[in-house]
Length: 199
Image (cartoon, rainbow, N blue to C red):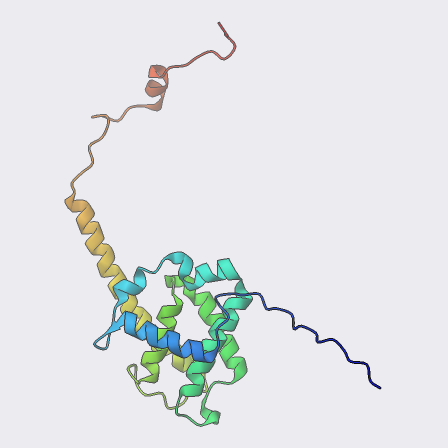
């Protein structure tokens, strides 16, 4: 007679918002497109308003490099698998991993968000940055991503110039003193008390 082993419970995985599967990714990608693209145009202003803590560098800070790397690998795998190319013309697992590292490093340059990456990949898959006939080299993808980033940067510069113009239109802020004052004069005018005199 065999002894019956009690069922062992599988260890619970620690929850992280970065643990998503491909079905959830499809839903998220559709939501990103709905929220940040109108009539085929990217709403960069909305993308640029995403808090810094929710962009890729902030996620690295909050969840760690490994978690963010796994998430980026999953996103790139989804893109790679959905392309209508033969397997020999797609990125390998190693190149996807290297591309994820590259994205993590370059995300600091202009504070990219996951929404930026997902929206770019959805648009690239639709052929909006030209047809992708061969994706053996990650540079093919990064060259197209540079087009997206350049358009994003141009909108950022325009928004910054508009904000600066608004600030200038407010006029000059009046100084508290009509003339610059030497620090020595300010110290002599200040109230100084003797810490040794307790009376």
